[in-house]
Length: 143
Image 1 (cartoon, one colour):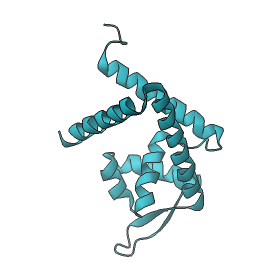
Image 2: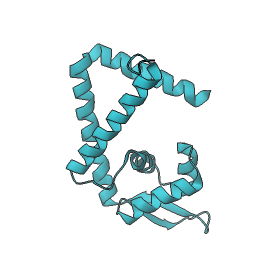
Image 3: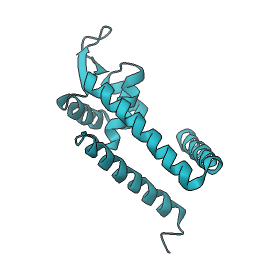
Image 4: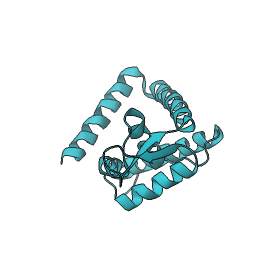
């Protein structure tokens, strides 16, 4: 079967292309140590300080995996930890200034990507595409 006509192949290929493009964009603006998995963590912590367990559950990954990713973010200066007020065995994760700056740059890059996609698809088709992606994401989350 030709991957170009296989929907799962097309989605996988587009996802990889976007990840490669995003990683390159971030490296170009000075964030060589950021990957797409890091962004998901930073975005969740931006809105509310959290601990490792909560973020792992939100992302659907193991505590061991989140611990490794968080360690990378802490080591590279994007996250900081502090003792949890409610549980002395737990640490609260929060963004550092570098983490906040990255998210500001990420949001600008994301806006640039959306504008590029609007140029390719036009505004109405882009909105339909985004709506369809949200519907599919919700379907698989609730399945």
